[in-house]
Length: 442
Image 1 (cartoon, rainbow, N blue to C red):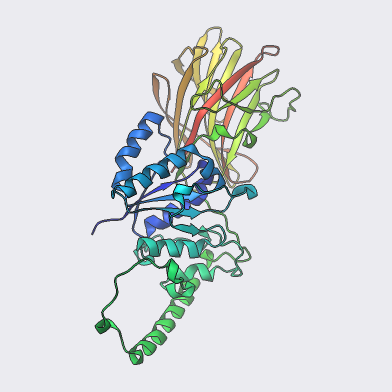
Image 2: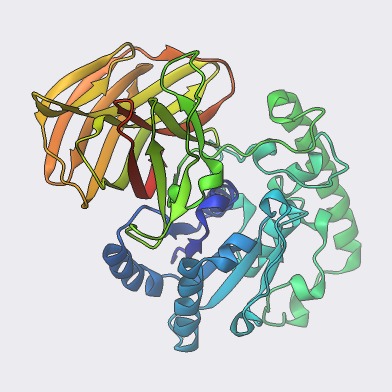
């Protein structure tokens, strides 16, 4: 049997919702791919031309941010062209909850006839309708890893124990009866296949008893799966990539790089178009004190593999004494951190890694040029609970590390984070520009 192949396109800020949607589709038996994998522009175009025609459907996660994204719009338009040429079946739109109450944007006229599934208020119903459209079944989900009850909030739900969410997973699909417009087109059945009502009614009664028993057994065996006292459980993505994190300067914050030190002269991060690698870059400025420019991201408590990639630009190199790039994960007060520092000293420039207490020299030397975009990548994972550095690269320099250190500790508040650390000499200000900032984890 041919496996249904679905391409999911979404804006990076909607990654948590998109991850849950893709997880549900995979558990229903579909093969799901996405374009949010941190590809370069030229590689992305090749990836799109190769992968999109192999899919039957494109699903766009629709939010105000996605409708403003030229990347998402180009993806949908490409898929609509393939649909018109008969190479794809359809383009579908799943409306996700808007972040920070953002207002809905006008839908392009050429998208008006694409089927819409509104998950902004009721994810369970929209997911059910979507599976009907795709002819996917809940029974195809892996019995070893059933989707958790708290996997997706049902906004405005009056069902605090989440039983309504469990009904579709248990096969009681008629609990949310779709309207005629919800149903996909199916061929008419022969009258010889209709059962007599005298057989249907007893069968329904038996089925209801079995389902009710299954619900009770499921709850009894999985008490932790029912979120009591909470109507809006948190979605925790376990495998995803967030791209273009530099494009929203309002989400970046500044701290002193010295604990307990208050910053006196600082410049907030800003978004600029020049210089930039893709049209928007984040500008961070060193004035008189070492600073950490950082952004917190949603938690990914089960993730163990991390890859930070970005491009950076230095208008001047001489004022810099240290420039570091960091990815970290905080879970239950335990902090895993992968940090790479370019140290610019009179004796030469070299790369260091953070061992949990101080910077440790990798003995990899590299001079960085001003007014040039440099491409950096840092890979790490967690092995036996320890911070493990795998490798890093900057431009043509590639170094395997294989270094392991103990994790640190911080105040509780589970999240991922990325940092840019700027160090220099007082009275010698400078700027650093970062672009195409991507954090990928699994």
